[in-house]
Length: 393
Ligand code: PLP
Image 1 (cartoon, rainbow, N blue to C red):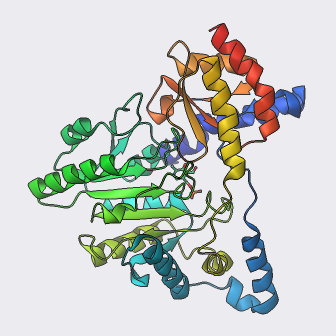
Image 2: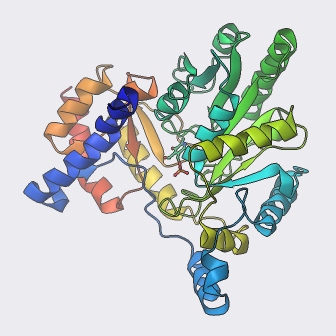
Image 3: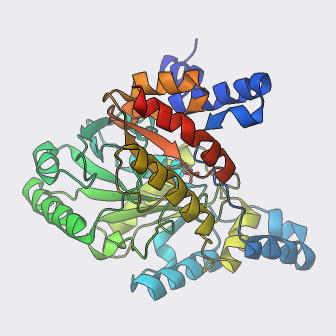
């Protein structure tokens, strides 16, 4: 007999994967140049050269037993020290190596943190639009996902809605900035107001409400914008970071969880995160990648190709009359569907082999998502279709 909820999860593809597979099939029929696939957030700029130099140097100078052996479950101490030093330099964070758990990217890190907090009847708040995987992450450990409706058209946070949604069962709020799918960066003002509400409610309920900061896009911001370091604003913040996007290493599976020293129940929380990771089979993050990241801890991506694509696509779409969320970070545009129904609009676009993701699973049906980590030529060739679609909705 099968576990039905696991079977359902495994046999139904996400809407994004569905579109991506459809695109692959169409390319075989109509040719690469005639499919315009904006579905998947796979980085389109190569990993920085420092990463490849580090891999070569390690292979040339270190023993294979050292490079490929198990590490401690929480990761190499020297890597945790290097990351702590970097965060302390950049954000005056005052974090220590023992505040880190090196994980296999943001997804399993989020699952571990959520599981660590998933007491009976636990509620986890998310702000729409949100990364759809939060739903299975929360629901498959018995938690309840509570969705705060989108703050259209600013895509900041409807603070009043957050305040009303917090209950004594709320364990955490999951926050993602820069945001997938809308590309917005929450302002420091928004975050401080949110922190004040969480502090007030934590006191009222007599237990901490944690902020889980999902940060794979932290370094991907444009126009000189900055992403506030959340533990400096709200003391009960747990950071889930990933190198998937910042160093274009999504297949290597490496990142970290940081529980800063001031966090409530600090030691117990880290032990519970470690236990939750163990319960989903975590042994250690990829050993060689840990050594690579230690050497590349202060390497930042060259964002020019993303920034050029962002301008190319956003400027053209705006000139055709499309409205969108302010694209300040990550590599997504979140665009209002002409006619207000992104599912119908996505179907229409699909007839022209233009693949765009409806916002429904992100909690915002009126908008669709475009990934602009793609070939700029494909963007140029797709523009007449976008124009035609808005002119004949
Ligand atoms: N969180 C968000 C908001 C994402 O967009 C993604 C990946 O696209 C993840 C988490 C998972 O990232 P990782 O590859 O680090 O597991």
